[in-house]
Figure (cartoon, rainbow, N blue to C red):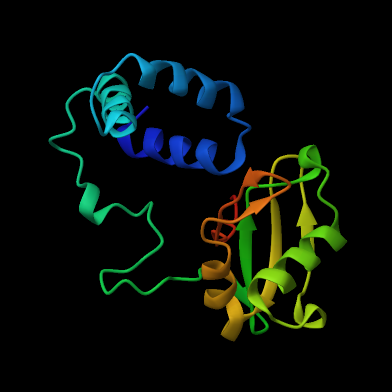
Length: 163
């Protein structure tokens, strides 16, 4: 598997998988390192072990990240004036459509009636908001938690058609 694919899998896992056991392991590992910046060092060591030599990987121009060079967020999946967003909670966390609407309204302040289609899967969900509110909604979830679970909201990737 090439390095970009590995990075993509790591990001997908971080956004959609239940990682509580691994977070606990990280806490144990941190206790055994006697200096500051332990979490970054552990993460860097894991990446080095996984990737080996990354000198040929152009991390600054990777297609994996959703911001342009200017820092503007790109919303790939926009249809009929609605941007589709991804959130890393779903049925496994007992999230219902109503719960998601309430959280979006509470955090962003947008009118719940403007929220479009919601697709809830086992560990993640997609929801649509008017394009003009997409960035506001995205930023309103920074550092947010739902039912004690840290959540990440990001632009949904556009569906690619298979041949």
